[in-house]
Amino acid sequence: MQGFGFETLALLTAIGFSGPLLAALPRLRIPVIVGELTAGLIVGKTGFGIVDAADPTFQLLANIGFALVMFVVGTHVPIRGHEMRSAVPRALARVLLGGAVAFALAIGLAAEFGTGHAALYTVLMASSSAAMALPVIDSLRLQGPQVLSVTAQIAVADTACIVLLPLVIDIRNAAAAALGALAVAGCAAVLFVLLSAVDRRGWRARAHSYSEKHRFALELRTSLIVLFALAALAVSTHVSVMLAGFAVGLVIAAVGEPRRLARQLFGITEGFFSPLFFVWLGASLQVRELGSHPKLIVLGVSLGLGAVLVHSAGRLLGQPLTLAVLSAAQLGVPVAAATIGTEEHLLVAGEASALMFGALLTIACASIAGALAARGQSAANHDEPTETHTPT
Image (tube, rainbow, N blue to C red; front, side, top):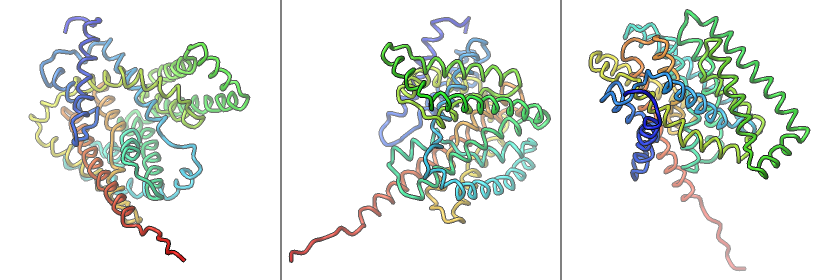
C-alpha cells in the first residue's frame, strides 16, 4: 500500500463493515470484532498485504482506537450501585480462586511450550471482559442474585488483569511499568476528586445543559483532552495506552456518565476508531506463523479452554456452571497482550495469534453458556406456580 490518504481511510472503513455484516447473520451471534479481526487478517500480513500495519499513521489511528476502546470498556464497569458493591466480597473470592488455578495451569503451559510466559498466561486465563460479557447478560435479560454476583466478578477480574498486564508481559521492565502505572493511576485519582467536586457544586450539570443547548459537545471534548493527556503520560512512562483509556473510563463510570456523552463516545468509537483498531490488529498478526509452529495452535486452544476451566472453578463456591463459563469471555486483556507484545517484540513468532485464537474460543464458549443460562432462566420462570383465586 502506497502512502496513507483518504483513499486508505475509505478502504479501512469499508473493511470494517465486515464486523456488522457477520454479526447480522441470524442465530450465529458472531461478535462484531471477530469479523473485523478476520478482515484484518485477510488484507494484512497473513493475507494479501493490501494494507501496511506498520504505517505510522495507521498505527497512530489504531492506538487512538485502542485507547477509546478501553475507555468505553472502563465506562461499562458497574461500580456505582450499592448492590454491586455488596456482591464484591463473594466475587473477589471467586477471582482469587480462579487466579490460583490459572497460576498452576500457566506454569505447566509455559514449561510445555518453552515461552517463559507463565505470569502472562496466568493473567490471561484469569481475566474476564466486561465489554463482552455484560452486553451478553443485558441482551439475554439474565437476572437474579447470581447474575449480579457474576457481574461483580467480571468487573473485578477485568480491572485487576488490565492493571496487572503491563507488569507481567515484560518481567524485566516490571519495576518501570509499575511506576508508570502508578503515575497513571495517580492522575486518574486526582481526576476523580476534581470531577466529584465539580459535580457536587453543580458546575457539571450547568456545563452539560449549556453544551446541549448550544451543541458544543463540551463533555466529549473534555473527555478526549483528558484521555489523550493521560495516554501521552502512559507512552512517556512506557505503559500501554490501554491503562490510560481504562483508567479514564473507570473515573467517568464512578462519577456517572451522562447519556449524551455515552452516545457520542459510542458514535466515534464504534463508528470509526474501534473497527479501525481491530482491522489493524488483525492486519498486524501473522497467523501463517502458526502453520510453521503447530504447537502454538495447541497453545491457543490450551489458553482458551484453560480460561474456561479456571472460571469454572467458581462452581466449587456455588456458582452455576453456565454463569461461570460466561465469565470466561475475554477481549481487552488478550487484545492488549497481542498488541503490546507485537509492538515491543516481546512474544515468540506466532504467539500473538495464539493468544487471539484462545480469546476467540472463550467468546464462543461464553456465548453458548449465556444462551443456556437464558434458556434455564426462562424454564424456571415458566415453571413458577401462578396464584389462582377461588371464588368465595
